[in-house]
Image (cartoon, rainbow, N blue to C red):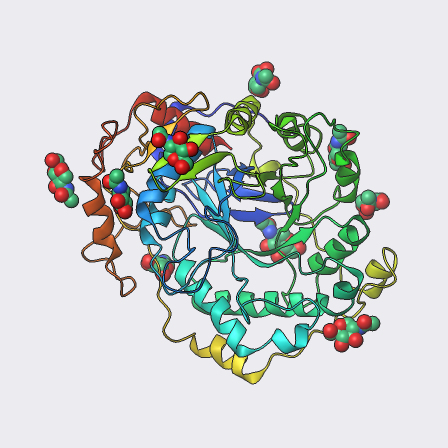
Length: 493
Ligand SMILES: *[C@@H]1O[C@H](CO)[C@@H](O)[C@H](O)[C@H]1NC(C)=O
Ligand SMILES: *[C@@H]1O[C@H](CO)[C@@H](O)[C@H](O)[C@H]1NC(C)=O
Ligand SMILES: *[C@@H]1O[C@H](CO)[C@@H](O)[C@H](O)[C@H]1NC(C)=O
Ligand SMILES: *[C@@H]1O[C@H](CO)[C@@H](O)[C@H](O)[C@H]1NC(C)=O
Ligand SMILES: *[C@@H]1O[C@H](CO)[C@@H](O)[C@H](O)[C@H]1NC(C)=O
Ligand SMILES: *[C@@H]1O[C@H](CO)[C@@H](O)[C@H](O)[C@H]1NC(C)=O
Ligand SMILES: *[C@@H]1O[C@H](CO)[C@@H](O)[C@H](O)[C@H]1NC(C)=O
Ligand SMILES: *[C@@H]1O[C@H](CO)[C@@H](O)[C@H](O)[C@H]1NC(C)=O
Ligand SMILES: *[C@@H]1O[C@H](CO)[C@@H](O)[C@H](O)[C@H]1NC(C)=O
């Protein structure tokens, strides 16, 4: 079933750094070939959940707690992520009114995709699981649509999460499911009307064993209204260091999702009851026993917060970032994933969605909501979809010149990491889904949002050598061999 093949160096050189929007076929994400006539390949998520500052840092004021708005931090973290072999991050909260062009462009150039939650913990900026009808309104959807506007132009955006763990108890399973599908319906209608590619919309589920299969059945079936989840993320902490495939519960997950007709992956994993974490679930579980069923996962989480799930410790007081042993172990486990693993798109079977019916639900859980008649769309929301949300800033990829930040990076032994420079292999190209490569707007002419952030990156460039290690590559130059190798790996998986 797994057609493994080596792809020639020439292929990498041809498509080097430009990320192409991912698509979906059956239960797989697909990285299309840069030439539409060529075969694409399955994309596995080698991901990290990314929210330095923690979930409570977001205030809604300007860039406070918006982790995709600080180019200096993004250079730093793109390097750290690239070194570990990461090809995607999940970010939980953004302010759609601030500029994300620099960070999204840095990530794009570094070969890193993004999954984005559209909600925030602020009042009125998500569905209320216990009172969904009161929170489903045009004010909430205005935020959601602004997030879509802000990110729809980035080719390295994989997709949006409509919700995170909204269904997490018997009571939330009674009322909220039809509303989750209503939000997905509205998001997909908005994307169809205002974006020029299909951007997947999915859901991130709580690992409540009694609600898992039924939530999946409810959210992923075909209701004739395009309201289904295009992918299904699971936040699972079942495998703690020392577990095995069979003791962890992964074998149960493998059968639960073996027939999935949309991609399934871990939107969070990384139990920390045993530390330092050794992450055998990567080689033995996610890319081992689950390989035919799951499409990878995102480890929780990048930066250390009070709950101690970090791979790295960031100290803003002295501009240092230190690797924990967890970072080394994570990198080593990702390194074990066979970089020759390549599954051709043509070998993936497109699976049709089950048709929604109450029997899909009743067979799993009698207390779960059985209704597939969704809340009707309020006319204010219909108007927003028809006319577009006003006052939105549309993001776009910009050229990035600076390749380093002014942070000092320390390894897990406390020694400074030399040459901590993101590897970019050339111009920051944008590939479209049809395989053409339109040129990127230069910073001075890019028709983007009102902010002037495109000059921010440039000015950071030459002030960034203060730590002595930093250097700058010019766009258009091919980076060092190590950089090319990193890109080769990211192009493969
Ligand atoms: C898969 O099948 C569905 C309908 O069964 C269709 O809408 C979709 O376009 C197909 N996808 C691919 C990649 O062939
Ligand atoms: C698609 O949208 C992006 C951003 O909105 C724009 O830069 C690009 O030119 C568009 N492409 C096409 C083919 O319309
Ligand atoms: C299903 O959810 C809808 C919307 O919240 C609610 O009106 C309905 O009462 C729920 N049905 C059951 C059986 O709980
Ligand atoms: C998967 O689908 C097949 C064929 O439809 C069916 O026989 C099997 O029971 C399903 N397995 C699960 C775990 O749902
Ligand atoms: C997981 O399920 C897939 C699909 O049914 C199957 O091919 C694979 O062998 C299973 N993995 C293990 C370790 O049993
Ligand atoms: C930076 O600050 C952190 C926390 O205040 C401290 O633990 C660390 O040792 C400092 N690093 C350096 C290189 O000074
Ligand atoms: C990786 O895949 C290649 C090509 O299929 C194979 O020859 C090699 O043995 C694999 N290595 C490991 C460690 O599985
Ligand atoms: C590093 O850059 C940030 C933002 O660009 C700035 O706030 C900070 O003062 C700089 N630190 C040093 C030591 O240059
Ligand atoms: C940074 O320095 C390089 C080489 O000295 C120069 O070519 C470039 O214009 C400078 N960039 C900025 C933004 O000052």
